[in-house]
Length: 113
Length: 108
Image (cartoon, rainbow over all chains, first blue to last red; front, top):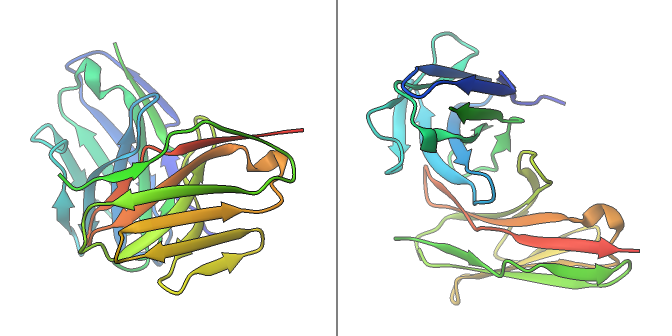
């Protein structure tokens, strides 16, 4: 069964450093998403991406965040200058159509020291 | 701010019990609705979509009331493996809004 994959599973970084989180969505999906979940809190939408551009972003997704689909398979989230409060689980998801069910990757746990 | 509200629980039920979760959403323009389950420190996994006519998948039944902006999930004959957090999810176009989840523990 096709699945979303994410790397790395755990990333530890120093405050102020840049990190890139990687995702490989399901191959025939066209819509891609990033979410985050701070420990003990709810899943929060960050950004959606379709047709090589951002289609929606939340207030969390400020100028320190960017997304890219550098080739036909990867979808990345870059955090330019990490802050302590960026520590969270970051989930990538993909869907076959707008409004369709989304399938989530296993997540990357980001720890900012 | 558009919100999705759920009773956080926890719900502690014996095996074989029937349990129901409720969810309300505030954006009347919401387009599609889902229940996901999330195990501790894992990703959300789709449990079922929720259709206006109501739908059933084995022991699970989901209902949607658009007029009241209310979604429900019923689990019959609960199993130990049903223990998880159940997330109500509302799609608003390009944006999925998650409830905070309802924690279920099924005990032997």
